[in-house]
Image (tube, rainbow, N blue to C red; front, side, top):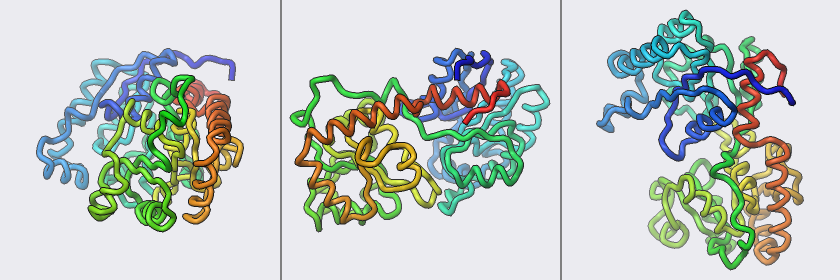
Length: 349
């Protein structure tokens, strides 16, 4: 695509604290020449965790009225061309209708899946408003099927990496700098606790795990053996990937995901990716050339042992994965450019 997207005034409505992928997208739109103003969601989070939990599950009435009023005031004052809603779970139909009446185009982005079997419990308002959006940004094939059947306008995107955060280490980086063997950084979702425990306990791989909520999934003994840290964002997350000889990635089945977001980020960091074999991963990376895939704990363990002993092969595959991520446009800038061109009326793949 050679054409440049039209410059627009965008009101970006999202969680914008450091480390959020929505904050990365905000900056990417600025790099793409857009005039982007923030409407951060964090100031509207209730201070009480009990009220916050209630607002999450029951976003109605006085629990969400202030943020709806504030958004409409921002629209009236700033008169944006586009109101960009990133995971909008607190906004009402009347707010959406008022935004449209003010002449703004509504773009909706949802990296989580309101329609899958995971049942996050936060989608009450979203399910009332999503048909009012002018353009939907979709990340999974299951949603493409739904939105096409509903006749709703969409653009298909890929989970993407942030070039200011996800990049290779210095050129002299090697295994001497890597103190993590077979590594997973993330939450204990779905089958991952049992799968990873088998890698460490049954197959005796040098396992290292970092991320939140592992105290809910593993015994103190397992955590003491394998968990090296909690939630990691930005530079800490990137350096955890750099310090790992093998980086694991899993798709979230209950979210109907096709690709693990971490897989794209690991490849962008120029590090060795070993991911669950899935059609989305196979479309993004050539197996055994740009990434390595597994279909079971046994296969993962076998390949883990093989590649731990072969740093040269790991380096070659990691470099090819990084090149593929760049060449195929897996960055935030390349993916969001598709959205802006679709708003211009261009057909994008």
